[in-house]
Image (tube, rainbow, N blue to C red; front, side, top):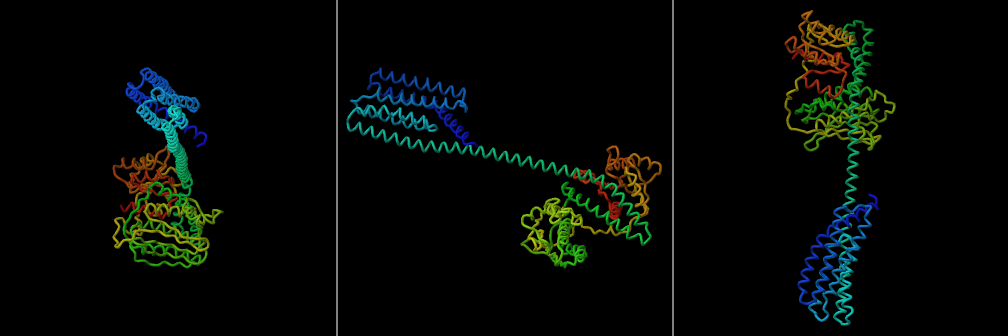
Length: 587
């Protein structure tokens, strides 16, 4: 806050508090004046008492009362501070003088008792002034001088030792009151200053919090818009890629020429690489949507370590890296699938950023926790980058944005997945000396079977032939690609562009449906969910359905999950589609 404005506000508060004291001052002075007049009635001439009382009533109820009324009516504003300050100084002078003049109107030089009572009355009045004008020092100084000066003058004209002693005592008493008032007034001003500084600080903090809140809301909105953009854009991009994937799958099934096989494999690998980029974005969308629910149970960590060893040994060996996996007998409580995703991301990064040396995957005990560590001898990470690496799209040593080095989403998914599981992720690293990434998970003493931990038996079973599958997609190329792929698996297939078209085809062919595969987004703003519900209601039976979508938006994932359907995203790898069909037909 500006210092000049602060001083102005402090002065206004001082004056306001002083004016608020006026009713108390008026009441106290009038009562004490009437009591004093009654006491001195038999000791002083009545006319002098009457004049003194009239003076009190003129000054206090009339002048001070009027000032208080104006204060209540208009209050004190910054443009009228000077006027209110002059008014209270003059009023304090008159009020002090009217009380102090009792030393002349009520004083009897021949009566020691009279002098003693006046002395006590005026000194008590001076103490009252100290309390009444605590807030505003100028008003107090004027009032204390006006109330004590007449008594000192009355005694100083009498050249006796007792009177001189009284003058000295009154002087010392007045000085002590001034000293006390200074301390009280400074404490009062400090409290007002602190109030305004605290108010300014609170306002500043509130503004900063509002700015931070707005920035957070803008960031969240930008993130939502980003997800919507990616979901919308990816749908259009996935559509031809989806068809291409299906054609490649059909071509691979029907090809009998060995010379053509490597070409098909290269085409498939390129398509798979592009699909991996989309799937990385999809995984982020699923985590953002809350569509991933952990299946937590106790299991032996060594089985997961062994799986990762099998998967990543060839990749490490290809770069001539020494890959060591230390077995462990520990039993942990987690979701093995999601925990496996975390460790796979860490292993992929370790291999990607290690050019020579070794990579070690092992475990350490830490109380009732187990820390799974991935150690590498790679490039290392500086301290300032160790928090940034968990942000989306943040990559080290990849200014050219080489896609072979990933998208920069792996560690972001590690952090989000670990947070979902309630696990702690830690990193220890320095440039040139490699890195150690650790995941801290609960350790338990026994293992038990998961309720959902069934083996992937269905994936290895023979694919059921001669099943009737209805494909609904408004894209002719996708219809053709899906028809070719499914018929190559010995399925009977009917295709349609919408739910209504499918009903017409079914009525003509009397096709008994075993499974419906529908694109989520159909023409005329209808969805695959609508189409499946329409066909099930007309056929009067529940038909299992699979929805295919290029839309990776969080709301889309939640919507399909609530409907109880399976959702697979474009581009669909033929083998994944095969497994999902097998799973639905086995239900």
